[in-house]
Image (cartoon, rainbow, N blue to C red; front, side, top):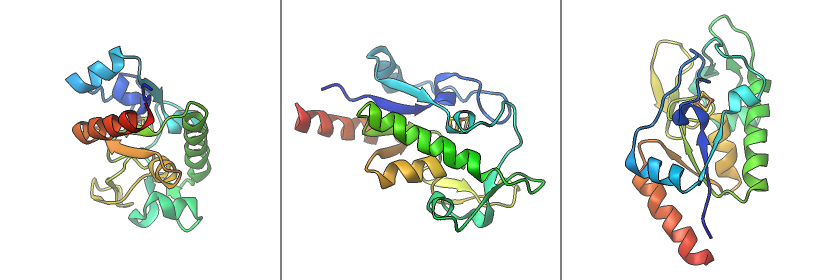
Length: 168
Ligand code: SF4
Protein backbone atom coordinates (compact mmCIF):
# COMPACT_ATOMS: atom_id res chain seq x y z
CA UNK A 1 0.00 0.00 0.00
CA UNK A 2 1.38 3.41 -0.99
CA UNK A 3 0.15 5.97 1.49
CA UNK A 4 -0.94 9.26 0.04
CA UNK A 5 -0.36 12.54 1.86
CA UNK A 6 -2.66 15.52 2.14
CA UNK A 7 -0.49 18.63 1.63
CA UNK A 8 -1.07 22.34 2.10
CA UNK A 9 -1.43 23.55 -1.48
CA UNK A 10 0.86 26.54 -0.87
CA UNK A 11 3.74 24.14 -0.11
CA UNK A 12 3.33 22.74 -3.63
CA UNK A 13 3.70 26.14 -5.22
CA UNK A 14 0.05 27.09 -5.48
CA UNK A 15 -0.37 30.82 -4.96
CA UNK A 16 -3.23 30.49 -2.48
CA UNK A 17 -1.91 32.25 0.62
CA UNK A 18 -3.67 35.30 2.00
CA UNK A 19 -1.00 37.51 0.41
CA UNK A 20 -1.36 35.80 -2.97
CA UNK A 21 1.94 33.96 -2.66
CA UNK A 22 3.05 30.37 -2.32
CA UNK A 23 5.45 28.92 0.27
CA UNK A 24 6.98 26.29 -1.96
CA UNK A 25 8.74 23.57 -0.05
CA UNK A 26 12.13 22.67 -1.50
CA UNK A 27 13.11 19.36 0.07
CA UNK A 28 14.39 16.09 -1.36
CA UNK A 29 12.00 13.94 0.68
CA UNK A 30 9.09 16.09 -0.45
CA UNK A 31 10.23 15.88 -4.06
CA UNK A 32 10.45 12.10 -3.81
CA UNK A 33 6.90 11.90 -2.50
CA UNK A 34 5.78 14.20 -5.29
CA UNK A 35 7.42 12.01 -7.94
CA UNK A 36 5.82 8.94 -6.35
CA UNK A 37 2.43 10.57 -6.83
CA UNK A 38 1.66 10.61 -3.13
CA UNK A 39 0.90 14.29 -2.66
CA UNK A 40 -2.67 15.55 -2.65
CA UNK A 41 -2.70 19.37 -2.54
CA UNK A 42 -5.47 21.15 -0.70
CA UNK A 43 -6.05 24.68 0.61
CA UNK A 44 -8.74 24.74 3.28
CA UNK A 45 -9.20 28.50 3.20
CA UNK A 46 -9.75 28.70 -0.55
CA UNK A 47 -11.96 25.60 -0.50
CA UNK A 48 -13.86 27.19 2.39
CA UNK A 49 -14.81 30.08 0.12
CA UNK A 50 -12.19 32.73 0.88
CA UNK A 51 -10.58 34.70 -1.98
CA UNK A 52 -6.92 35.16 -2.93
CA UNK A 53 -5.63 37.55 -1.77
CA UNK A 54 -7.56 37.94 1.47
CA UNK A 55 -7.01 39.71 4.79
CA UNK A 56 -4.92 37.80 7.33
CA UNK A 57 -6.92 36.00 10.00
CA UNK A 58 -6.09 34.75 13.47
CA UNK A 59 -7.91 32.73 16.11
CA UNK A 60 -9.07 35.10 18.84
CA UNK A 61 -7.09 34.85 22.03
CA UNK A 62 -4.59 32.53 20.37
CA UNK A 63 -6.90 29.66 21.21
CA UNK A 64 -6.28 26.46 19.29
CA UNK A 65 -8.30 25.01 16.47
CA UNK A 66 -10.11 22.71 18.88
CA UNK A 67 -11.63 25.77 20.56
CA UNK A 68 -12.90 26.96 17.18
CA UNK A 69 -14.34 23.52 16.41
CA UNK A 70 -16.22 23.53 19.71
CA UNK A 71 -17.56 27.05 19.18
CA UNK A 72 -15.50 28.54 22.02
CA UNK A 73 -13.40 30.82 19.78
CA UNK A 74 -13.83 32.67 16.50
CA UNK A 75 -11.46 33.50 13.68
CA UNK A 76 -11.23 37.18 12.90
CA UNK A 77 -9.55 39.51 10.43
CA UNK A 78 -7.82 42.68 11.70
CA UNK A 79 -11.02 44.73 11.29
CA UNK A 80 -12.99 42.22 13.34
CA UNK A 81 -14.76 40.44 10.49
CA UNK A 82 -15.76 36.95 11.59
CA UNK A 83 -14.53 34.44 9.00
CA UNK A 84 -14.96 31.36 11.21
CA UNK A 85 -17.50 29.64 8.97
CA UNK A 86 -15.10 29.62 6.03
CA UNK A 87 -12.39 28.00 8.12
CA UNK A 88 -14.80 25.39 9.44
CA UNK A 89 -16.07 24.62 5.95
CA UNK A 90 -12.52 24.24 4.66
CA UNK A 91 -11.57 21.95 7.53
CA UNK A 92 -14.61 19.74 6.96
CA UNK A 93 -13.87 19.53 3.25
CA UNK A 94 -10.26 18.59 3.97
CA UNK A 95 -11.43 15.83 6.30
CA UNK A 96 -13.97 14.54 3.79
CA UNK A 97 -11.34 14.46 1.04
CA UNK A 98 -8.82 12.67 3.25
CA UNK A 99 -11.34 10.07 4.36
CA UNK A 100 -12.64 9.47 0.83
CA UNK A 101 -9.08 8.77 -0.33
CA UNK A 102 -8.02 6.75 2.69
CA UNK A 103 -5.39 9.35 3.58
CA UNK A 104 -3.88 8.91 7.03
CA UNK A 105 -1.05 11.46 6.93
CA UNK A 106 -0.92 15.20 6.25
CA UNK A 107 1.95 17.64 5.81
CA UNK A 108 0.67 21.12 6.53
CA UNK A 109 2.11 24.62 6.60
CA UNK A 110 3.13 25.67 10.08
CA UNK A 111 1.77 28.85 11.66
CA UNK A 112 -1.51 29.05 9.72
CA UNK A 113 -4.88 29.34 11.53
CA UNK A 114 -5.97 26.45 9.28
CA UNK A 115 -2.87 24.36 8.70
CA UNK A 116 -0.58 25.06 11.68
CA UNK A 117 -0.01 22.00 13.82
CA UNK A 118 2.45 23.19 16.47
CA UNK A 119 2.25 26.98 16.26
CA UNK A 120 -0.36 29.57 15.42
CA UNK A 121 -0.53 33.35 15.82
CA UNK A 122 -1.76 34.69 19.11
CA UNK A 123 -4.74 36.70 17.84
CA UNK A 124 -3.12 40.15 18.24
CA UNK A 125 -1.92 40.54 14.60
CA UNK A 126 1.50 41.54 15.92
CA UNK A 127 3.40 38.63 14.40
CA UNK A 128 3.50 36.77 17.70
CA UNK A 129 3.13 33.01 17.77
CA UNK A 130 1.92 30.66 20.44
CA UNK A 131 1.66 26.91 20.79
CA UNK A 132 -1.42 25.43 19.20
CA UNK A 133 -2.96 23.98 16.08
CA UNK A 134 -5.09 25.49 13.36
CA UNK A 135 -8.64 24.39 12.62
CA UNK A 136 -7.96 21.93 9.81
CA UNK A 137 -5.00 20.37 11.62
CA UNK A 138 -7.05 19.97 14.79
CA UNK A 139 -9.96 18.36 12.93
CA UNK A 140 -7.74 15.93 11.02
CA UNK A 141 -5.94 14.90 14.21
CA UNK A 142 -9.28 14.40 15.96
CA UNK A 143 -10.12 11.84 13.27
CA UNK A 144 -6.83 10.00 13.54
CA UNK A 145 -5.03 11.61 10.60
CA UNK A 146 -1.50 12.46 11.70
CA UNK A 147 -0.43 15.99 10.87
CA UNK A 148 3.22 16.96 10.42
CA UNK A 149 4.59 20.47 9.93
CA UNK A 150 6.67 21.08 6.81
CA UNK A 151 9.84 21.12 8.95
CA UNK A 152 9.03 17.68 10.36
CA UNK A 153 9.34 15.61 7.19
CA UNK A 154 11.71 12.96 8.64
CA UNK A 155 9.11 12.20 11.33
CA UNK A 156 6.43 12.01 8.64
CA UNK A 157 8.62 9.59 6.65
CA UNK A 158 9.08 7.35 9.68
CA UNK A 159 5.34 7.35 10.29
CA UNK A 160 4.64 6.51 6.65
CA UNK A 161 7.04 3.57 6.81
CA UNK A 162 5.29 2.27 9.91
CA UNK A 163 1.87 2.55 8.25
CA UNK A 164 3.05 0.83 5.08
CA UNK A 165 4.83 -1.93 6.99
CA UNK A 166 1.73 -2.72 9.03
CA UNK A 167 -0.79 -2.52 6.18
CA UNK A 168 1.04 -4.53 3.51
FE1 SF4 B 1 -1.47 27.25 2.66
FE2 SF4 B 1 -3.14 26.17 4.42
FE3 SF4 B 1 -2.95 28.82 4.21
FE4 SF4 B 1 -4.11 27.44 2.26
S1 SF4 B 1 -4.85 27.61 4.36
S2 SF4 B 1 -2.61 29.07 2.01
S3 SF4 B 1 -2.91 25.57 2.27
S4 SF4 B 1 -1.34 27.42 4.89
